[in-house]
Structure formats: structure tokens, C-alpha cells
Image (tube, rainbow, N blue to C red; front, side, top):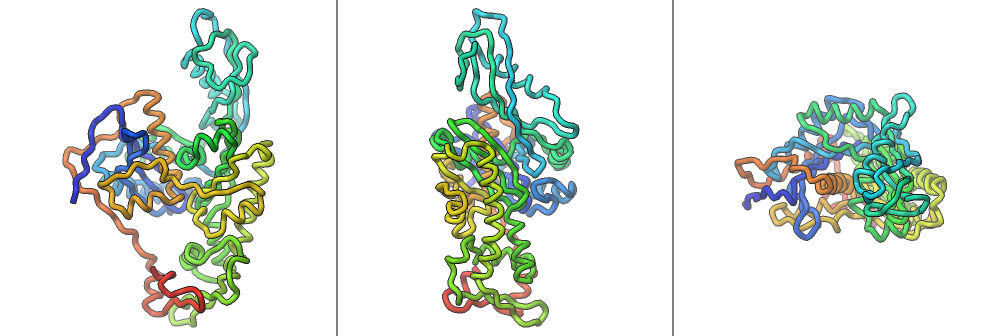
Length: 449
């Protein structure tokens, strides 16, 4: 087996993105390659048992998941991981617009980065409601001596420098709990990044951001939204429904176990009931010798469609509230694990009237010969958009500030390892006693593979 060879090239520091999601915790190790794409060196994934709707609800279980994901990623990439870039989401996230200004005294000096940094620092001093803190301050248009609409004022002459800012805030306790989990896992959080901002880096093009585009990241616990226009972030929101809400609806609507509901959703689920035939039936085994249960694929789609329509209606409300509905030339890009649901782009187009495509993070990835092909192929799934986006954001931050690499290559080089996920224990035992079979057009192996 080939050995991982990593150089200490300062121009390409090794960075780690840590996505603490509701369904999975994912650590991705990578760096900037020579052709300006992102080279993935290792990936670690663990089940997330301590996160509910994007917010940490159990510290110990979350720490355990982080440790497990980091250990797998570290072994695969042969890197000692100390510092990570962490994503944050949850219903507590809020956004607001604010305007700031500074008056410059040195008229002979051009406007430089320090002036903009001072404007941004002033925004962090805004008085927030009790229990909230500012996570991001994102500059939009600048105004220099009453000349508006300037995107980059560096190098210009001027006395009065103003800017519109998009400010993102979150609950202090939610932020502290994430940092606490990372610290307890023996790591340091270099940057706390809003997850839809990270996902946008992984799946959106600069042309789309310029034209006007809506990013919808459908995760397990939340659906994150980010609206861009003229290359600038205009609106962000977090909707407290996601893929897990669909699974719970299937569990209750079809009266099946949760893990079977999840498999029904991923293997046979559809967001448009009319696209399924009436005679398609899935048969799942009963518990402890009970009779097997027959479920209509069309009825399953009706359950899924009802919840997905609700989520999209929430998204559409946010788009209309932002005031940019008529300016979205780039339409909608859906990503996250929920984007893999069959016929979802068609449903989004039907509800919103905007063009829709699925966002894959593959266009930013460089081919890594050391990573096994099945891992590289898996990384191109929309569910890794946030993790890869956190990695890209971390790389950009380090390139901007010229910071030293935050990880160390281990002295002893290890071969890249692959860990296989454990199968669903209950379902495996049920399959030994019963059999899952499909009538008519759906085949046995589709469910079992």
C-alpha cells in the first residue's frame, strides 16, 4: 500500500474542517493544491448522538463523536490534528443589517486593510440582546466620501469611510457548548463558521453569487439558507426542520422502526408522489416473528412530500422576506444530505418557481491518488458540502493572515486506512429471520445492497 507523503510547504498549510451535525460528525483534513483546488488528505466520520437540530444537547456524546472522527481522519492523513475550523448552525442563529463609519485623519495615506479591519472591529462592539453574541461581521458595499456602491475601497483616497454590514449572531450558550466540546476533545477551535456560509464556498460558483442565488443546505436537524446577489451575502436563516423530520414522519405514518424509516427514505423515498406507480410495494419484516408489513411506495412519497413542501414553504418565505426574490437569476442550489432525495429539485421548482440544481462539492476537489477511490467518490456527495466548505474557509483564512500551519505531520508515516461503517444491528438481525422483498418493479437487491 502507498504511504502518505506530506510536505511542510508553507504556501499550502494543512487545515481541518469539523462539521458537528445532527446525524453525523465529520472531520476533513486537506490543503490547497498547486492548481488552486483542494486536496483531501483524510476524512473521519462518526455518528452524532449528542446534537439536536444543530445544537449540542449532550456534551459527553458529542465529545466522543468528535474524538472518533478526528482519530480516523488523523490516521488516514498521517497528521496530528490540534486545531480545527468548526461549523455552527441551529434555530438560535439570527442575522441583521447595520451601518458603520470611520473618519480618517491621515489624508495623505490611501485606504488600506487596517481601516476596513477597524470598521469590522467596531461592529463587534455592537450592543446585542442579553444572551446573544456576534459570530460573523460580513462587509457588503462601502461608501467613500458619499460615493456609494464601492465593493473594494483599498487604495482609494478619502476621509469618510462607511459600510453596510451583514451581522450574524447566535446564543452565547450554544456557541460556548460547541467550543467546550472541541476543547474537551483535546482540540482548539481556530474559527467558528456559520454552516451555510461554509457550504456556499463548496458548491456555489462566483458567477452564481454575482447573478443572484439561493443556497439551501438540507441537513439532518436544520435547513440552512444563504442568499447572494452581486457577489455579496444578503440574507441568512436557519429553519429548524431537516431530514430527521422526514424520517420521524415516516416512522409515525408507516408505523415502522426509526432505522427502517431512514432506509425507506433513502432507498425508496421520493419528494413527488405522482412520480411513483400505484403497484409498487415495499415489504419489511415484522419484529420477533410478527408478520411482515407491506408499505406502498406512493403512500411513502405522500408522507415525504408533505414535510418537504413545508420546509420549502419556509425557505420561500425567507426568500420573499429578503426582498431579492425577483433578482435570483441563478435560482436555487440545494445541498446537504437531504438534497439526495429523489425528485426534490422538481418539487423546489414547483413551489418556488425558481430554477433548481443539486450542489456537489466535487468541482473544488483535487484528485488524490493516495485516498482510495471509494472514499474520494463518497466525498463528492452533497452531504459533505459543509465539511469541505469549512476546510476551504479555513484555508482562505490562513492564506489571508499568513498564519503557520495548525497541524503537524507525524514523524512515522502510516498508510492511509479506511474504516467501514457498522451496519444497522437491529435490521441485520431482522434480515436473518425475515426477508425484504419488493413487488412488481422494485427488485430485492435495491434494498439490500
